[in-house]
Figure 1 (tube, helix red, strand yellow):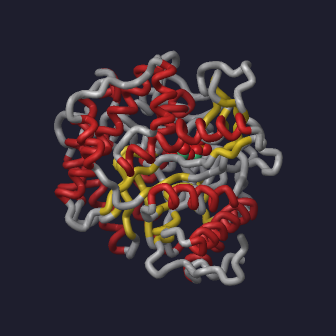
Figure 2: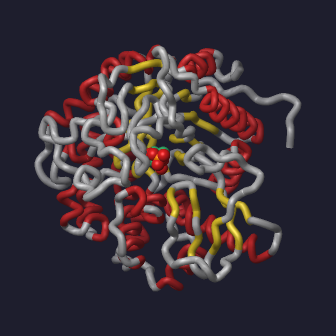
Length: 467
Ligand code: BGP
């Protein structure tokens, strides 16, 4: 439906940008930080760097916050590295790590930028991983304790909390992301999933108990799945994949129960988790204040052809297929990025509508953006392709608002260039260019891209000027 008059962005709309600790900070072993699973990853995809220096934000955060302030951000989403706060995950608290995030948060608040804190973004402490990671139920309590430390330290300065980033991607594409080891059985993976859901529920309840003004929600990657055709079995496959990829996570987080189609899928796999006494009550008791989500593109799937393997394959935005369940297909109506991810701004509006209809909770966009091989020439980066991507998506937020969806804010990926989850430093997303190459760190100097000036204008005009 096209409206003649689009509703404006509401007052107080959060104009943000996002990063995550391990992708931007560097300083992986400084000031008492313990190693995370990302730091001890045995190998990185060929031709890509590790995360040891990343964008050196740990040492340059003050300069970076000054740039965010110049950009006009009213919010900044970042994650706290569990291993800076509690180096082995469940032992001593590291005062130097705690102090770093105080400095960062204080700098943001002083600049009038609302901090949005992700408590856990892929970087599980390696010491917990050695004890079984999320498959080990003890990790639930370790996370709950970590969350209590965060609420006690930063609760008076931070209102917006995100529990777990892209739990669904860690479960479905954990091998591409580096959070799950090859060959791990599905039963163990979905036991880990159950434990993450318990951890999230505990943290949600603790936030409500300990941070009077705190607002907390999950941050899954939500991509609406379209049927490849109107063949009823394609529609069924899309419905199945929506349940397995999206609703399993959001139904649990928001409604406090397992999605029945996803549960049936787990039964079929022989991968239903062990549920201990009290688990279901805990899960039902935790209610988020908002639903955050990361959106890059929609998916399209067909009924399985019989040639799919029983491992999902692909990455966050490329669904390959799974035997007996669905076959990922290319959506012929959509262009692709240089990295093969489809571009579907209207799918953004479709996704807003689906989430709003299902839950009627305020929605916060915590990632959306375009990865590209940007080029620095004479101190400039002409990333008009990124401006086009962001403009087209921001327009669709306004359509969604006009549809009646309650949207709290937009925090695209990424505030500044950082190292991609699995495709190296040359895949860039930032408004600010970081002068390094894949392996050569150069001088790590910061340069404003064309998208920087454009987004500054969008924010200054409250989204009225997208030109
Ligand atoms: C999301 C992750 C981010 C970020 C982003 C872009 O899945 O939450 O950490 O990396 O995707 O993905 P990539 O880096 O693979 O291009």
